[in-house]
Image 1 (cartoon, rainbow, N blue to C red):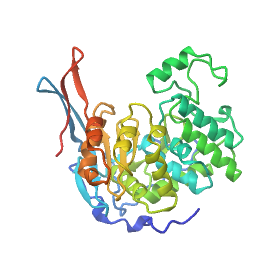
Image 2: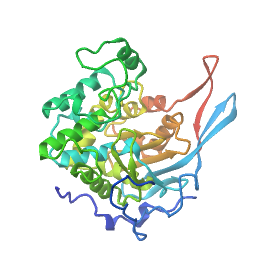
Image 3: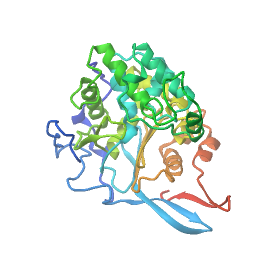
Length: 377
């Protein structure tokens, strides 16, 4: 492991970063899940879940009447880690899901993964499965002397509807895949290709790279703890088949602030790759891609079940969890939270593009009759 002096050690995370808001399962055949030290700042309170202390994040209006409300938790941190805004419980334990991918990419980069920036962005991606993404995954694998047959992620269709439709129509003779679900088309294939390439660099087993005690997963866990300041209280398996470690919402925000605000080293490389190549991180129509195009230096990553993390180049950061897990309010919440974090002050920001990204209309007869409005100032 390379030591990075500019990342504060876990026991020096300022308590001011994680004030209280309003307030697992283990993997079979693994060692006992580590308990969380009660003295650690930002530690989730035992027994509390995301259902406890959730507060309104967004209202859905139709014809001027509130039709539904999305509850959840949100935190906005300043560059020094102080809380600028807390809604719900910022110290609630969460599964970061794919919002953890920038941290996972850091662990791979720190352990010898060497890729050009567009492919590094793809390692941190939940991509659409567009042709450019599938070609990129193939290149990551090819550079390591591997093929898509080495992937162990869950087969799936491309997320991008036009790409999924084209995938079903094509015979994929050149790719060796049929028209149904495939590992290379699944949105996490870039991450899995990166994990495999990291194994090749270090001489680690490729067949067992998804085991929790495999070196690549151990390194990922260590980086997650280092950047969040939180020991995982739970461990499980993510939808793609990789190990998944819990953290807190404030911990996730700290990680994104440190990545986006890093002056140099591997954190800065991942931040630069993602912001310079946002289309590789998501793709057409994805709010993370649109937000990074609008805000220079922004690092943003969505996760399944309503999780989001984002960091600005000055180290300010945002993290939120939508209680119902739905994607509908995410763009509006993200845009408003980024404004609260100071996105409007970033040199070169395209505020009109950020506003457009956050505009979520409610349709009636195919025409806007309302929209999603955030519930916080």
